[in-house]
Length: 52
Image 1: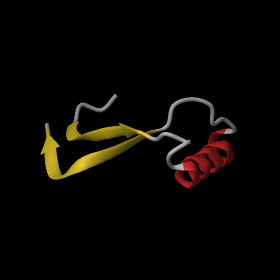
Image 2: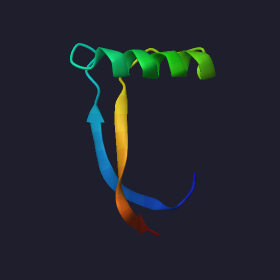
Image 3: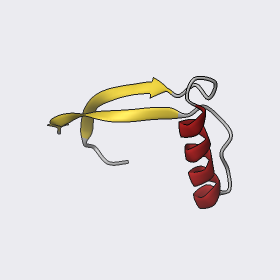
Image 4: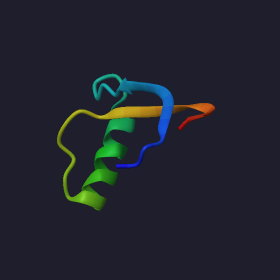
């Protein structure tokens, strides 16, 4: 695993509140990994922050 540390935020994507986003993420996961079960979490880095 790489030793860089990033600062950012994460949020859970609720399919009942954001059905289009959840559907698109699931489709992309299915296409790439043939798997899309589980919790979808959006990770957003803090702009311009990299801690080593």
